[in-house]
Image 1 (cartoon, one colour):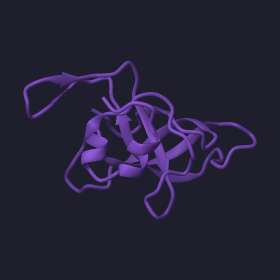
Image 2 (cartoon, rainbow, N blue to C red; image 1 turned 90 degrees about the horizontal axis):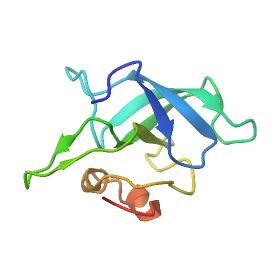
Image 3 (spheres, rainbow, N blue to C red; image 1 turned 45 degrees about the vertical axis):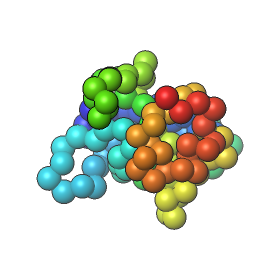
Image 4 (spheres, rainbow, N blue to C red; image 1 turned 90 degrees about the vertical axis):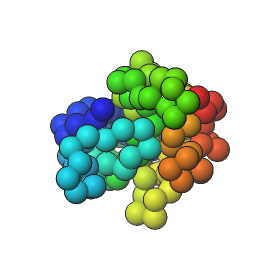
Length: 121
């Protein structure tokens, strides 16, 4: 579960390292889970990266520490909370995705992110 003001690791090569969730666009929903799009602000970034500190982006949540139940009854959880930054067209800002991502991301329509990831769990 990802709430507002939660810090997330950025798992792509856009230049951002840490982002903070400032909004969850779905009205009436207070939490975000795997595959959900959130609004974030960059808190820590590399000086020569595409993403700059203080800028606002949309991002898709690809890993959560809280376990998520799947329809077959199994659970999935990761070691960290991570996201991939998106551009204004809903495509990934970076050209690589580092680390595994959840299958729920691909099922929610982010096939480009799933194809860039080294492993879909």
